[in-house]
Image (cartoon, rainbow, N blue to C red; front, top):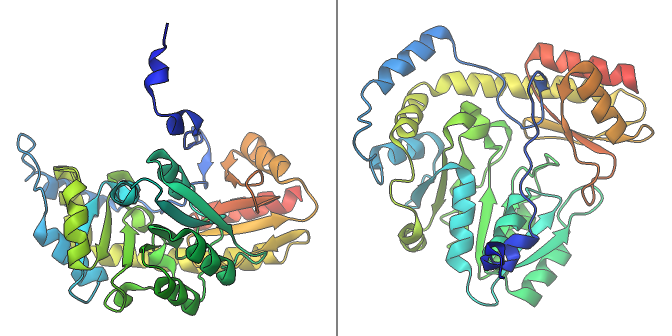
Length: 356
């Protein structure tokens, strides 16, 4: 007898689920979250703001005022249009669905954010991956060759890149935009901690799309992202956005957060200062290669000690959870450390120093 599982698409059966580690009882430094909570006064003001929610009604289907607040704070400062998503993951999936014609191809790099490949394969796109070089820079000639060979309908570029933390040369990304006739998504999830942005380049390239999220800013719990691109393109993409995809409480919370953005900007500034301090401490350790970062995390490679061994020691003996990347292609012996509070960072650095 045929199993009900046989009704599922073969692409789904081949995939592995995105893994989220259990952080119960641990210092959580594995998911690049903002470690700072709100003050009691700010939390009380937020709760009062939420009191206006009409939970018996559907939320605004396309909240124009909220989108204008986003544009005012983050850009783009052009006539580019904005689509809102239930986290940036929903928008990545929306883009993949939009181009998933028979034989269509998606292109991204490795190592990078795993959801690009997972979603591309799930919707049936041919998934082409180009390896970064040993310094985690774009192999621009290989990228251009892949564009020429496969004519990708969709290209994902994380800027800064996750999990490496670096910003690639702008000229390399311009060359990709100019070489491709497909959609080129510049994912600036870690924009709050980076020294550069492509926000004002959307007007130059009709195939460029800018993806952002509130998660790294300090609002991971509300699941909110936004995508900006040329109006004609966004009008087509908006046809497959699920109705009422941003719930009432998320809309109100994001509206409130934008009115109090200086709090999050100060937190991002503190995280960047803490990141610099961590880079200095870790860079002074023998047996550790530290990579430059423009994000809220630091990537290190162990030169002598086994990365999985250190990961397990930190988790089991120090109650610290970080991200073990050592089994991923191109990341042998690598660990990713989220920048936490000053006390968390000190505790982590001391534990690593003690165990090397």
